[in-house]
Image (cartoon, rainbow, N blue to C red):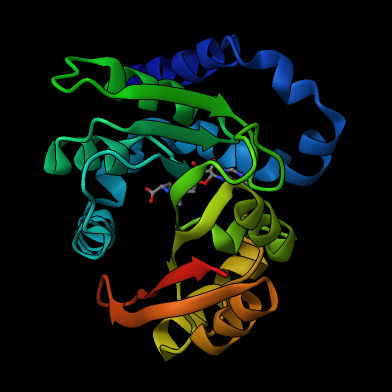
Length: 241
Ligand SMILES: C[S@@+](CC[C@H](N)C(=O)[O-])C[C@H]1O[C@@H](n2cnc3c(N)ncnc32)[C@H](O)[C@@H]1O
């Protein structure tokens, strides 16, 4: 009971986050309030609860990235920042790293994780923003990673349009999310749509492939695999045409 009270107090404190003004933005509130509420409650247990899933998706992304260490990278929906921390560590990254997320509590954790003992001379920016509207300059980014966010988006094509705008010509988008090519994930998608207000929908890999082409990306490589016994995942590595 005492533990529950402590957790509740922490969440209450997070409502006083420095990003509070953003929560008053009417568009954000209207479209994303369910997402923000869900991840505000989940923030403190997120890394632990999703440990197996995150280990699998992060390893796949790190393998696919092959960075030189100087690129400008954006993690769209960066959550608690664990992928960015791993990128910085693995590639000894010296380029610019930008993470944005719509949930202040997740971003607060990312800030704590990423500003603690930075061993590399990285320029780091964290922003409270959403995938359809973030402040990165046009044609300025080498790589955008968007992992496990797509199923939350009511307008995924608007997000792809915004990613396209921010990328340099030839820049890469690594898009990772649940994949309903797998029957177990189809079931989870159906269940989540019924009972989980933050879940919009998951996609088949063929639908994402089509969306990417429609939004002027060419797919360089793609794979699907099971990140957990029930969750099928897809990873697209796509280039801005
Ligand atoms: C399942 S978590 C994934 C976090 C991280 N990318 C990872 O792989 O661990 C989804 C995250 O996306 C964020 N999110 C959901 N919709 C978003 C949007 N439209 N724009 C930015 N972030 C969003 C949530 O706040 C949450 O932190």
